[in-house]
Figure 1 (cartoon, one colour):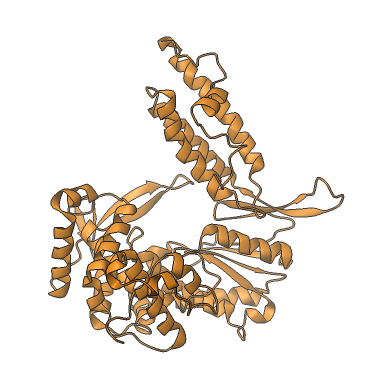
Figure 2: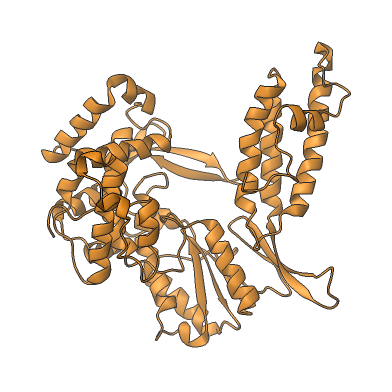
Length: 467
């Protein structure tokens, strides 16, 4: 592999790259520009397309000259831009994004490039923190340092298109130009249009914490032969975790929160995708399909034979992964709903056609409750804000939720939007009642209507994703 063939990410021209049978398409706006006229994003994008094309055309090719790409000026700039966009807290060394900007971004990136070139770069421990889950439990997250996030991002930009060429169409999590909305749309097609009413809702136990390093590296080495890249990935996998003022060595798993972790997770679970999707395979023969988003996946078919489930369990056992038996279940969607990616899928009676049912895809009750909790917490914390500032804080919360759950011709969130609107009216009434001692102008007024008409607060029933 020549030195100028590398990298992997997102962008306008890469959109065409990922479409089946159209991966050779390159945006003419990139090829017509001189190198000096291209932004760092455009240069990375063009780099990635070349690498993707090579990987797509030669399925068994192993890429062997990649490490030097990590130190390219435009690669580091693009990596920094994405790390900054992702925000994130300071890691083990206590250095934040703001601290890097104060220190000098160009100087900081130059020092990283020098460390990588001289092979003196060493990953620092991962800081373990916990965030609350919707079910009340705590989810462990590993926060690498800003420096490690930048180097990991560079590596991800370089190797991602190689593995994207191998990934199946059934996976949607943490992939360029793919989303949970796409996964939900595909499920509706399988269940409603193709009449696949049986669903095996699988839940993996502690997936990110249990990925075996040796088996994961075998899969990485099938496409990457550059020893220095492989050494970096092994270093990140074995980086110790800092928790409770002590360092713990990592023997398996990849920390949730690392830049490179989602890609490594997709590489590992691609084994399951290929096993289920293979045209001459055991699952395909019985019409079984898979839809996966990161470590969450379902199998769908008109009827899923028991031996197919046993075969899946055998595959996962060889991969040293386990299903959570309490959460994994086989359902018939026509009689029993199931939840996936924050949505509830269920068959309801059609209000307009007698004796007919339709697949109703609505936000989960827990998801709606989580939104109301966020609204309530925001109002509690911002009792001193004026109406304009209050609306400016509420709108991103409301829009983010509605953008996710409003999928045209797929989901039906209107009922929850009505409930949300009613909740907003009541909450704002209580909010201004508490402020009545300060003679708030909105006390005993229709606060919701005034805030939506005069101060730009989003009205859930009038908002659309196009806004």
